[in-house]
Length: 352
Image (cartoon, rainbow, N blue to C red; front, side, top):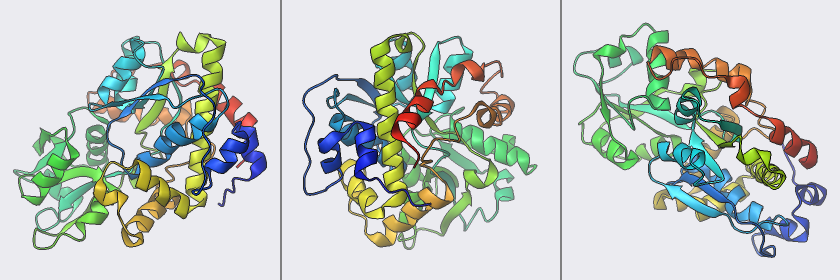
């Protein structure tokens, strides 16, 4: 589906003339100083994170009444939920595992939107040793994950269970750095790791280190494997000015989603600005366009209306977390997911 951002839609977003010019790479007009929101995001931005970064750093500051947010990059993603819950941040780009855990523990956290839908992370293996998913259940197999209990660890546990493979045979190793996991895979110290699709694409150019390929694509195993969400707290949302700010943030994100889906050139320009990896920033169309196509048409990472954010969709993944021992299953999703501000943003922004 093609989503065109015209002048009328830009005005509905509240960008005015500055917002229209913000889409012109040759001219950019910043809005007058306004409210500065404290927003926590993960310190590194992969290809899937770029639209959100563009929304917060470029589109939101072009909205009347808002300045550049005080971005608070966080090295350890689980800390984002802690910062929001304790009032250190207004909003957070948080991982779903930590958010669910906090809600189940009684924190008054609220999911108001998506950082992106599904996940761009895949399980990549050394195919010289691990040729099929069943081989992960073999003797002396090691898989490096960010942390035991995180969303990719749970995802893989669910996939193995679905295919009747005993996950207890796998030696899971915690490696917090994606770079360390990549190097461990290349050196043969582990047999499989989760990584973003652009990293998997770049591995194709590695010669003489092994045959590496994608073993698990989560979007083919689940309806939607939630990864990252926009969160705040119930108390923060009680204030009218904060409600308006939440709507403005969501409108900016929705606009970035629609622009990404519609315009590869725009997305490529944003990757050059906001991606963390130097290799990704400078990637040619031979690498970046397949990544964009996977994100937009395969994974559907940027839904123009965030329609996948529902209690029904989220409820489907809770049993997977329970079986992995990451949740008890007592979280109240009807309270946790609050679409009030998203629905208002969609009404004000208009149909894609």
